[in-house]
Amino acid sequence: MEGEEEEEEGLVTPGVLGRRATVEVVGHKAHGAVPKPGSMVVGRVTKVMARLASVDIMCVDSKSVRETFTGIIRQQDVRATEIDKVDMYLSFRPGDIVRALVLSLGDARAYYLSTAKNELGVLSAQSSAGKEHYLQHQSSTCQSRDGTHQWTEMQCQ
Image (cartoon, rainbow, N blue to C red; front, side, top):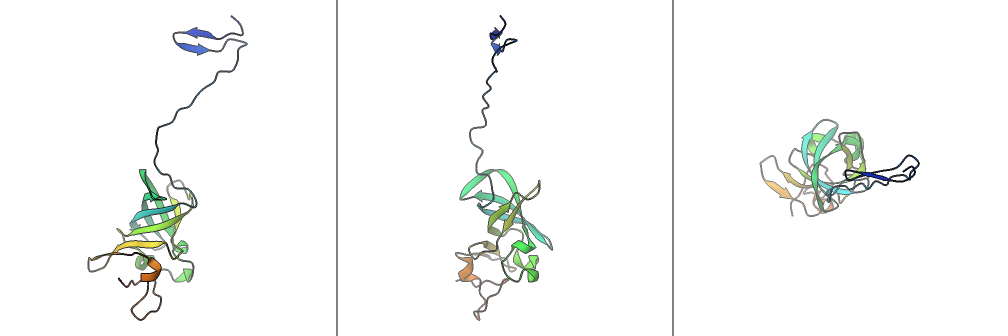
């Protein structure tokens, strides 16, 4: 039987001089959305530290995720200008809902995210008085009452 396949108890094995066996790998049916560089994500801020904010990613490109993914918004990725003046504690609070862009896969634990565009940033926040505020367009509501651009104040319209 050299050079032929042998069948034993339902298993097909190649013979000594036989052909290579073909293996089919079948994965799970649906993994859900997975972040990748360039994806837009929506997530909840879970922790704020001096140089970064941690985010639990809930949606990727408007599709909900089935697994837990963590993102990190670093101080230098909060906004495009005046990077050295970013105060993470004034920019984010735990519980804020943010829209961000996936920059890279980051380290083994988290994706690197950016909010450095007008259409990105905090979508929903709770004020220090405990009232919840929803933003329709961050660029149109991120101004102080006197019209000057402020990074830490919002005017609800």
